[in-house]
Length: 292
Image (tube, rainbow, N blue to C red; front, side):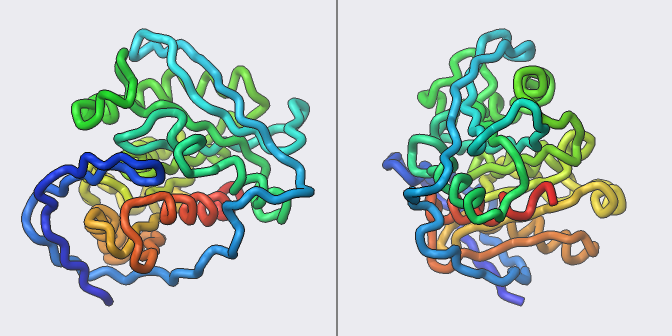
């Protein structure tokens, strides 16, 4: 067992360079959580680098009408190499952080298309498409919303489940059941994924959180019915940097799961903070575990 000592962050960093989300303050007093981490295994060198001589997928920007928001919204969709409309694919919904939008994963350093292309080339993933939406469910869903968008992030499940998922299932050749849907995200999107994934197990069977932010509900709220989660959730997987002040959000859930016998993974990425080094590692590993 390793003890995690965390102090509340006193301010928000205004540095928003590529490959790093703004720091998000923790609320509350110093925390002391006993948690047993799962084994960290480094990703292979080059897992996030473009490789020559392999088939490449494509990324398509789509627009859909949101009933809950009342506007036309955007999402990026990764289609794997040799996408075939005659086949059926599973779907991973991959969410961004508080400083991002539908382009954060794809254009700000996450290289999900390259990671997925390499995994496909190595035969390490099931057939799936990856949907990268804008998780800020309000009429002005630009990045300028920042910290003022907390409610909009919390309301995104209505847009996701009520409008985006039906659009994807109508316009792409995908399965339309929970066993073929996964949700994961970074930072604010990690918290959303834990909240929405565990809160809607009738919709999502696989749930991942990468450096999940303080929007993450407390474990007892996320899991009011332990036996239901044991029965219905197929994967609960998390990673956070060892130098990230937000580790507590993941650690409290991991400790609760261990205490109640719920299968749950939490990896402490050594010496890393709140950045795409951790999040790319998260996608690389999570994608290999789902839909199998």
